[in-house]
Image: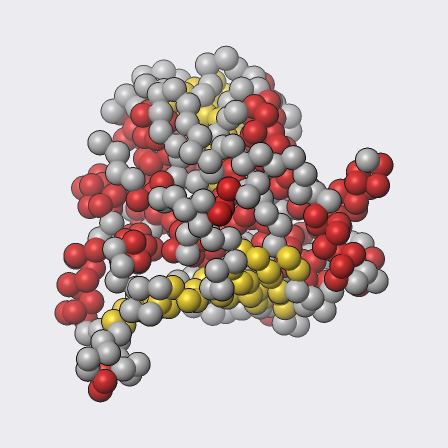
Length: 466
């Protein structure tokens, strides 16, 4: 027991601080895997299909009201007006952020939310209230896990911004807490609710793609201006990760939709991972030009992580927020019957009867539009007239995500993602760091589901709610 405790502490500390990575370079592959497996104890997997009694009006507390928290609060407006939800409490260190959300609620909600802005721990007073059903967490990354755990321990369901965890030890703590408390613990990944990703998913589910073999996703987004700003990320917290760590820190925009495409956790699962980072150049050069003191960047400009599933499918995931490159999530998926690639969205349909078309041309705009109209996800069709008013939420997908979360709680049905999904997608970060630190050594992907991934079952996100 003492040895296991020590190994848990070692892995948690190394992936949390990004400092003692040299210790891992002295370990062989077997030793690394033993240390990872030591964390895989006592996962029951019994929150698959988990639901609670219907909550007619979901009482929400929001922690963190910066750029992201304000948007999440706005996404609740329609649900508040239709008596599906109510914001009962708000917490942020900056009073002006809280006042802005309250101002936006004027004319939307009759009651004024309680506010918690006194100090760094005042959020706990919000979580401890008896009249809160759901805690939304939109704070800097280091707070996501402790806030989610404390929320569940206080009898609340929790939904956290991404990533919900970025150390292996925190991944297991979240699962264990959710299983003990019997509370929902979901990472709210908005790209799973974008109309392009849902369009592709619907085609896959309807058999257009045949058998899937490969997928690619990414977070390629020039964040140099934001990370070097003294105002955008309070205290410039985000760039500190890039100074101390090297790997893929933002996996979920790409891997969330891909995991749905590949039925991860629903009959297939990731088995191995290897990760490599390029040298760093762009962010440190930008810091020097700006006169920023943060020129000591450890994270490479481009990280590429490769994974294989138990059923033999492969995944490529990329991460680059240093380079002046156009935004892309790639969103590519390959099957025996079709191929899709994003940015811009293109579709190829394999037709063995017409050999002249093999592999040379994407569908014409007209043919693509026909497929888009035929296979638009029913959730997007249902909410189109409403979500048009919430375009500030990343083109409307934020509203679809929050609508779906609240509606599942209203109706007492399982959420679209389980705690096991949330952890699987987030754990790629510490696993990528371990691989990079060990000369891109392949690591086994831990089973965060207690073996339940082996059971074929339908995706919750394909279930329509009346």
